Figure 1 (spheres, rainbow, N blue to C red):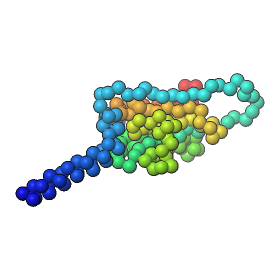
Figure 2: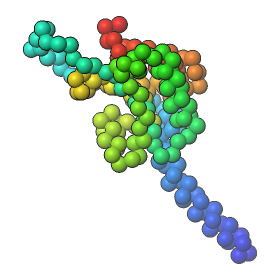
Figure 3: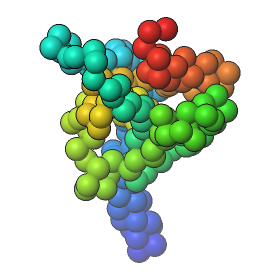
Length: 171
């Protein structure tokens, strides 16, 4: 009888602990559900019409971020791997020249929590940020990664086409 009681207490304790850990990562499960998601967020600043065309061209670069937390499911790890592979295979020259950078960021670390507000993160995400002279001019959360993660080829095409648009917005 006392072993049954001990087993019951341990089961309840495990459920409570596991629930709190899974709560941190429940965004993964929610993102894979059929519930509607926030549409792509693209933020562009107002154009500055006072810019002088004779000035030297600004230093521009694109940062591709993968944001994750302390607890990482298999799907989250797959998204990171597929994104890195898509970027590495298609943008070798841009990575070498630092016109494109790849950053993996744990948003559960205190110094990185600002990214949640900065990019309106609601789940593990891939975000592209366009910087000119060190100032961010636009960004986009690539939220279709969750629907494409089960198709590596389409996932890579999506990542690569979005990165191309950020590297050369005239296309």
